[in-house]
Image (cartoon, rainbow, N blue to C red):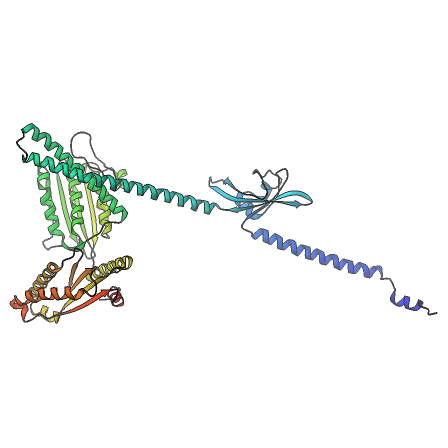
Length: 513
């Protein structure tokens, strides 16, 4: 029989208490370390989470609040812990809550509640996401959409009412005018007086309708400016002549301050005339004695126009609202001119469409001065503006256009020979080319011996026919002039969109000279 006693001493020796204690201690320390690391990671995740995290017990008392929660509610940890949460908790559902901060600003949070155990007891894990910015954006979007709807309703109403009124109004005015002219038969003086009053009020109503339409078009961006080179001095003189009688009837002096040389600008003549007409009419309307003056000054980069009066003036606190629609200052009760309060709003809109600025200076009892400026544009800028607009419109409408270019050969030599005669010849050629054009949108631009014929809606296949017709007109003009017929030689070129889009792109780049 084998004796195992010696092997028992070797293989079954129990561990010593000291060895057992060291191993257990190491394991415990490892567990504690791993637990601390896990706790640190969880704490780090909670601390860096942008969402608010809270633990609330079944009685509604806050047991834990993350840093994000403290920031969202603007409370310290001490103010949170052990105090009522204050909001109903429903597990598994999203709910929105609102809180007001110390500064009065309202915050919105999206809250989610999950049932958990906290230190062995039932509790709720509350997560709140700050959606204040999103709610504000949604509210702003709703406000913008509401504003757009209201503006559209207003514009539709103005347009519908205005257009529906214009036709019967025009017919009524024409009928009254025929009666006043005694076409249907004789009328007595009393009848003529009554019809004259009616006719005057119809004209006033027509002006109101036109002003409403003008404002509506300006605000909708539907005003189509037909810019060209114009003589502002001549336009101002014509405006003054128009108002001479009205100023004289009120005992006012109507003055015009202009330089001797013509002032040339690039603008829509009809719209500029409307600007001056509104300003001068306003000045005369609100001036009972003294004078009204129209002036213009030609600067290096802009043209400044001014209409001033010695009328009632406007209070300083009212000046910020001077260009608001349906606003009038200094209007008195009783008989006299009445307006819609749209004149200056229209003027401001038209000036800004031209790229200009407008300002008003006034003082109660000492009159008002309205000044506006128009930027001066180089020919290259004018050409670029026109071509860019044509390219954009053609691209949007999927349409076409053509550009004809006529260049006078050896133009510099001709200018040196007789500048005055050559410039006169160029003016006559430009006039002849304008008369050769047949479509409403066709235009002619001129600069230093070059003529640019802008032809919207003209296809490349049709452009040669326009070229041939205009060339023939120029040949006839040149042949009939003793100075031009032996000196002028014209070179021509056609560019069409979209075929020559790349070449046209070069023409409208800022670097072109």
